[in-house]
Image 1: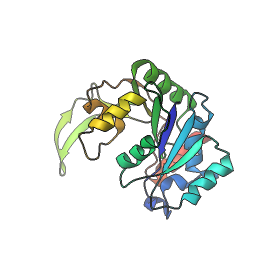
Image 2: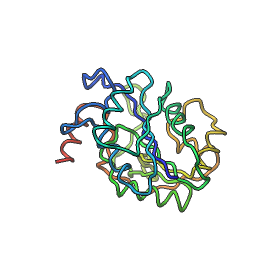
Image 3: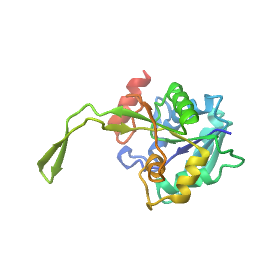
Image 4: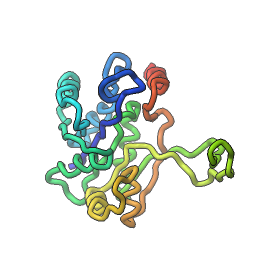
Length: 223
């Protein structure tokens, strides 16, 4: 059973929204509707676990599921951090086999394509892990207060995106051995467990919505 976990979190303070930013409207629909769709449509994904913020009404998320007829989606309450929220979703998975694939995706990335979802599924199935990355195209400066300390070589550097995909057994082992209280993403946790994490080309339009300008860019991409 292949599963996608969508981590919904992040307040919409910069969006003048009392709830999370993934509930902000995008082209007439909640942003979250776009995020879920490619996972729901992918036939190789059997279930989508939507982890919603613990301090928000479940009804707001259930309404989206019902309106969009997302019959694959199941709701799970999150925790006090992204790590804890995703782990709650992972620990709710039932009847998983060692080689089943678990995808983890940020709810605030509404432009992920079904092609990228399939690419992650394929590579994670073949190699055990996969994350999408975009090569760093800008010059990187390390700064100290208001001055440049030095210029960092961008060779070999990349921006990590989601969805990130892992075989169930690899992710479970990483959770059992996690060394940090709050790892920044699941790839870091898997790396620390001694398992290599493989990369696939990401998508420039697979942006993470962090402020209203990003939302405008998403609307542009959607046409």
